[in-house]
Image (cartoon, rainbow, N blue to C red; front, top):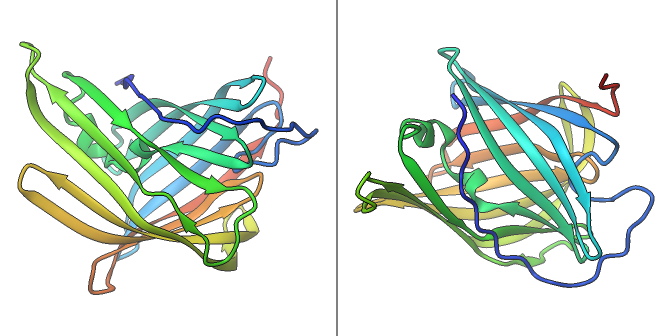
Length: 234
């Protein structure tokens, strides 16, 4: 199944000085493929996700990465998503749609999904204890009549750079910035509050992500499984 979401990102406009290597939170050679594995709190695999760079655009004041994401569930169901990432003014921008549940979104794949999303800002040169802007995302599931059947919403608040850790993964060892945030997910009258910990490495990207209940119990975690870049495409 192939799904294309309508994404509306809000960006901060400013100048960006290009270096020979992009110095962002994505591998920055000609092409790359990143694989993640997501597990539940009992270390059972929930799904795999492969990101492929399918296009890269250098503009006067920003770089845009066009990404195809292929998700394979534990039942061998395949889901495709397409999204953009951007580097601008020493910041990296991720659409907040990445924080919605892709499996839940796919359950509505035969319907029109309209997404209004902020950009989640990650500074390329973060400072410990640095406070980061909040971000929101709203996905509206539309009926054929054009009315809204339901909506899924995510709010990221209290975002902060907590520290620097060395993270070991199957893809290698990475010096990573640790970012914490509170995630509020709501749909109708249902509200869920969790805590996120994310680790990002320069010129790699997300290395690990953990989500916890308010009581501190682990819900799930995502970890970098493999990274290939600058390979030959015939």
